[in-house]
Length: 433
Image 1 (spheres, helix red, strand yellow):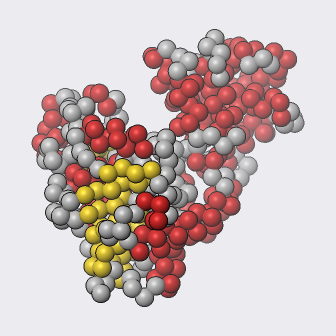
Image 2 (cartoon, rainbow, N blue to C red; image 1 turned 90 degrees about the horizontal axis):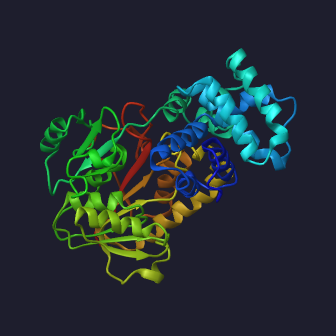
Image 3 (cartoon, rainbow, N blue to C red; image 1 turned 90 degrees about the vertical axis):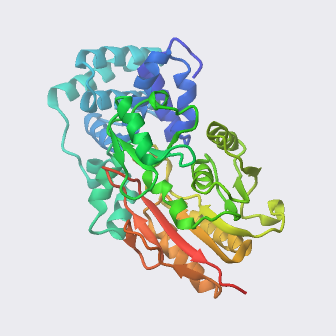
């Protein structure tokens, strides 16, 4: 994507093709945004996120309209038509602009022979309106395997989960308790003309009525607040932090929870933050710097304790494991295209391995909080149940909270369109020797 003359829809089609080929929007969208003027970038981002959100429904419609699939070498035009259908069905864009500019984008992609097909498909879509989806997967715009897995795991909730995944996530802030009380910062927002209210469960959380650019948030650059979902903020309430503790954030990037730990208790002896991604660790440092916080950052595989651990056990460990991210699809709709059902078993193996490694470096009488942003039981309470069967030196703590569902081995939050993401937490303690 190095042709700066490419129109926006052509750029969007190439981004979608990259996602289908296994790249996340976080990876492939920034280079495309850099090819546009700053005032055009929000529109491209909205198109790419929106088309991913409704990809399976849009593709179902396109398949109904095409007599036969496009050749593999013309796949980018398939994505171009999905972009156009997204704009016809879900945006305020004028129809004539969508049709004309999509045909021009087809030429810009080097496919002038397909402009007639593109024009015909889109005129038919404009004339006929959206057809009836051919399946639940198309209706809810999720891959078939995910719909079936959710239906099996959550027979009373699967449709609500799918609907929540398609909703626009609210913008939620975590107030830096070292700088402001939540009440003080709500007043700051009100004075800035930003409507907001306190979150129901996270003690330092604030949810905005309407998202705003972070540079409109009072004192953001000076570390007053961070953007973080309410569910993710709950980790600090479960860790039971106290002055003098050594705390490990075992899979730390991009650093939101590391910073939340430091804000929640200003007199910790040390916070060690580990991540195996060299690309993501600088983001952790940026967040720490903005908030004027200090942590010991290390690039390492947390499970390989011989590689990084200095032999000093930890009082508290937050283990936010790699997972399917099935609870945060509304924020990352490309997960629907990137994740495969075959990913779940290998992820569960990684999760159990991390849990076992972290247990070895937890102090007697120490506490470990296991967390995922998943709604699949295989990654959540079933992992905890497996771990409890393997070891006799584990006490499962039932936290005194009002949020989530009691899964007997942890608590599950399902995504709520009006507040938090989907998350799972379990609290484990090691008995004294």
